[in-house]
Image 1: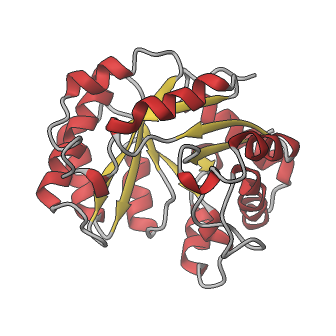
Image 2 (image 1 turned 90 degrees about the vertical axis):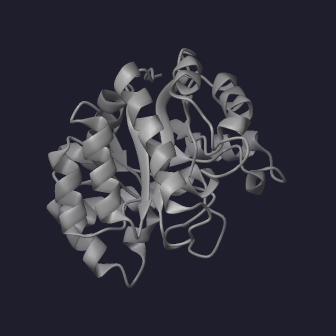
Length: 261
């Protein structure tokens, strides 16, 4: 059994084929659980509806940094996020964080919304799903200041170096690797995979984006997480079964509201 710890099943990329077909392919590939991620709180009802439709899918609630300045997200309150987490299908908060590569939202707004999510995670005890790109120092700074060492979570779709990995691990966070680790030019990231302890690793697709080799360039989907897990196994000198079992245990330990089916 494998878990796709981060996918976006509400995205329109899956609409033409139909979600049922996507989910069935994932199950046939041995994907026993999926976490579908909210990126706009204004669209949380659609994300929650998908999670409620399948016993082996949970969801999160949160605002992606790209949307931090959007009309429906900029004034989000901690109390609103906390209220949404009362639903039993909501297993985490996010994705949230900082993205200075695109800067679709001003950095100061990203930081403020990020801190609000961290505070909600601290109040609820739920894990955070953190997105960071070209913002390593500020991400760690906000995590330390707003979290005060009292929050847990995962650095999703990790693409940073050993410094960010070590700082994240020191804060008690897990590291989630995506199909990027299968890309030809990702040697430095593969070195990070070797460095991170196996009991702190998750695997994900971030679908519909970042399809792993041999599907690179195509629309990604949860079934393809098997290729990322196999790369972790190859880099660690482990069997695919060992990696599947360990990353599954890691997921359910971190996202402890999710029920293993």
